[in-house]
Image (cartoon, rainbow, N blue to C red; front, side, top):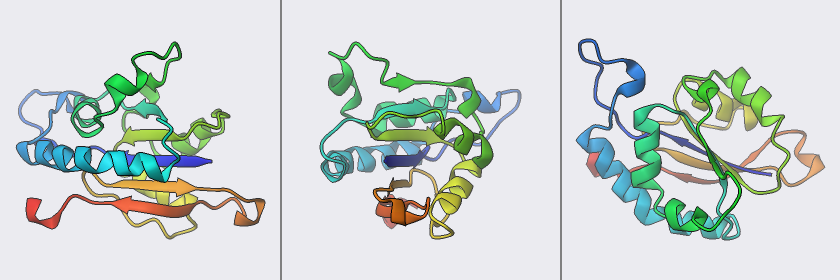
Length: 168
């Protein structure tokens, strides 16, 4: 099983009466997405060239991260009759326990990408890897794989991507 976790890119700070779910990406977040978009085709090679199913939080910043950071989604899924991209309401601000329980419902062999928020995403990566998953910053992507029964239920980190430091 392969799981790709992506924390949304940098968002603007909450201002006034703007609901948290409606916060857009900051200009820095847009630059992070552009850097991610250049890397993602290489990530696909790491998972066998198969476009993963995607669970994306319904928040504006996660949907924008998907749109600007994952360039293959429109063409990769255009001819598919299946619902490869989903925006489940439960994913907005989901804690690690909820992510874990929802994963139990996923029985597909196709890799699964989850685009969501902290702290739930980082905590879950930490739990899945037996304490080896470092916290996920803005626009951090990690690929986790569990191939063997001997893995004792733990996922191995097979790839990690972070935006270049010059973007800070």
